[in-house]
Length: 138
Image (cartoon, rainbow, N blue to C red; front, side, top):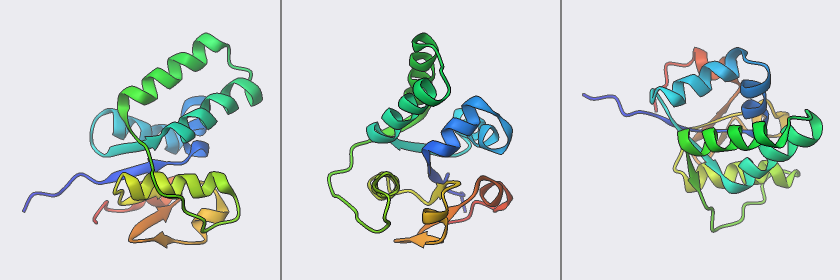
């Protein structure tokens, strides 16, 4: 039996950590880049990434655009048509929408409001450590 490649939404906090700090989130981004897993995102998640890199981290515009281009190249961008209102923070609901639209197997996040769900519509919600420790079975 051929093992299907899993698909995953990386929350903005994971993208930021992978770009700015490295570590486990960067390992996951490398897995996406190497096509070991499918990465999924949305325009809203990418917009939040751009905003945080420029406003909170002071990245120059050229670097922010470079990061955004790279993410658009390695991640499949979905455009959710349905709104989800499951958690209190709307940004977290946007992550759920991207995962549902992208028919993802996993959401990788550091956000407690999402992690507490553990699962949403058969989509497992894990930290980067939990994701890397899992056997990536669906």
